[in-house]
Length: 205
Image (cartoon, rainbow, N blue to C red; front, top):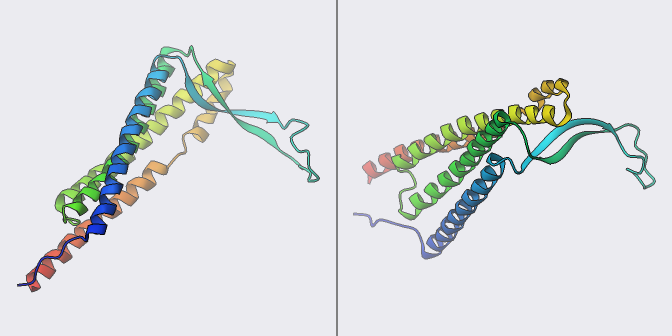
């Protein structure tokens, strides 16, 4: 009967360091998320990136090179005293976005814990990755969309220009959560394949 092989001590130390670091990152994310959501929800400060269309300042370039054409297309502002609907959109959007970040960190932590338990191809890990993939995709895209609507509403309130609403399509184009969800789903598939190969190998021993 072949003896069971496990992780080396150096491997376990490295995994523990990564696991503790990931847990600390998750704790930091939760603190920052709560602070950020409270700031927006209490209508004291909302960090926004708004579309603008302004010419470049005359002193934008002081070197020997020459700008043929250019314009300022975005401005970062901190807004307050927005209406309740806008604050609601921005608050929920920010909360969902932060939760999607926590899902990614949680999935990574679950992978590390599974490896520490000598179960890198456990069915629970596959299910966790599938759940994280769905959560990140749905929460991330929804949060991005709601934030875009809230940002467009805030832009109108700050400028009084209703023509800023068409910029909603430009602001809502972040597909990063979809890509992350695809990566996590791929990881779940690899775990499933690894689990099947591990069972086949055990039958041959």
